[in-house]
Length: 355
Image 1 (cartoon, rainbow, N blue to C red):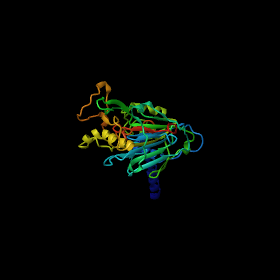
Image 2 (spheres, one colour):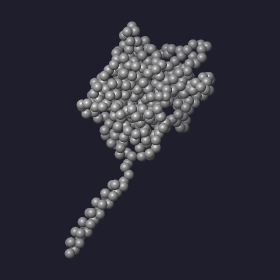
Image 3 (spheres, helix red, strand yellow):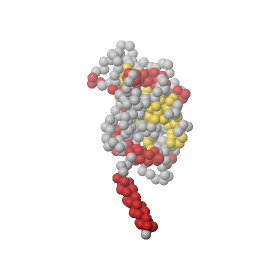
Image 4 (cartoon, one colour):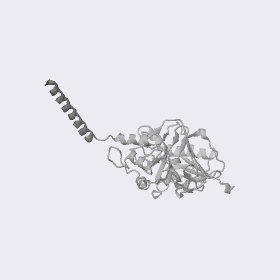
C-alpha cells in the first residue's frame, strides 16, 4: 500500500514539474543577448554556392581613412588610417560595437566573386577634397589599418558630409569653404557571393555580412531589449530599406567611447583638425603639404558666415560618445565608430593615360 502511494506521489510530482517548466518557459522573457549570440555565431560564414539574390557588395570605411585611387594600377584602391599620436584610436570590425585589440591590421579584398569595372565613379560629394598625387608612395609601417582593394564600380558616402573651412590658398586670399564626408562606401557588382573574401593576416579569411544578420544584431534599427529607436542618423536609416540584396564589410576607426567627458573633452575639440592636418595630409604629401589644404575649422555652416578667428574651436562634429547605442544602417554602419569627428580624405594618382 505504501509503495503504491509513493509511486503515485512520484508520478504527480513529475507531471507537476513538466507543467511548471512549460509554463515558465513560455512566460520567460527572451534575453536581449540571445539574438546577438545567434548573430555572432552566423557571422563570417560563407554563402552557400549556387544562385543567390545578392547583387551588391558594399565595403564601408567609417572614419579617417585616406582612400587613394591608383590610376597607374588599374584603378585599384589603397585605403589606410595612419597611427594617431598616442595610438588612442580603436579599430572596429565587423560592426561598430566590436572593437579589436591588435596593434595593426591589413586586408586584401579578393576579386573572386566580383565583377571588376576598372573605372570607378567617384561621387561628386568628394570634389572639395579629391587631390591628385604625383609622387605618393605607401608607407605600411605607419598604418594602423590598411586595405588593398580592386577597383569598385562606385565610391560614394553616407551623408551628410561635414562643412569645413580650409586655410587660404595664397597670402591675402580668404579661407575656402568645403564639405568632406566622414566615410567611404565602395560598391561592387556581385557575380558569386559564395566566393567573396576579405583576407587579413590578423583576422583570417572574412566573409561579408548579409543584411538580415545586421537587422538581427540591431533589431532593425531599434536597440535590442529597449524598444527604442535611435534617430541620430536619419539618412542612414533610409538606406536600410535598400539593403536586402546587399552584403557588406564594415571597418571603422575612431576614439574609444567615453572620451567626451572630463579633461579629455578639451583635447577632443581639436583632435579632428590635428589628425587631418598632422597625420592624413603628411601621409599623402610628405613634408611639403600644398598651401590651402589644411583645415582651420570643422562643422562650418556657410549660412552663419565664414569668418575665422583664433578663438577656441567648439565644433559640434566633435561631440561624443563615438559609439552611442548600437544601431545599423547600410548593412552594417552603426553609431559613430570612426565617427563624425574624424574626416576622411580622397585622392588619386595619375593613370596610365596621363603619363
